[in-house]
Amino acid sequence: MKSWGSFPEVEVLPNNHRTSVAGLQVGVNRIRWVHPASTPDHRHDDAEQVILMLSGRMEMTIDGEEYEMAEGDVAVIPKGVSHHGRTLGEDAVFYEVFAPLRVQNLVGFIGKVF
Image 1 (cartoon, rainbow, N blue to C red):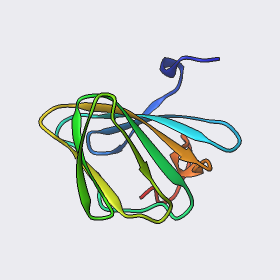
Image 2: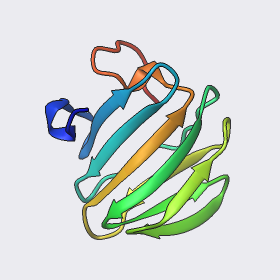
Image 3: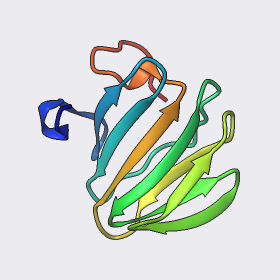
Image 4: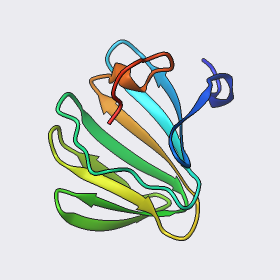
């Protein structure tokens, strides 16, 4: 067992900070978006993604549908579905879970993340 604080936080896009942990088949990231923050439209052809909101508010567009997410909300994004997000006036913190594991999220990966 380890605490999130024992893993490095990496700024992967402007104002988008990721702390990652992984097992052999699943990866979990703690994401901290400092307002204003956003991600470009993208998709994951290799993994399903689950987002679990911890604090703040953000807008997620998943397969063309817009959703406002706040503390306690959960979204599941299937493999290959386009999505993007942005903060809504405040910082946002959430967990994202990928199954199977995406090695692109681990510290030391060299290559395209999005």
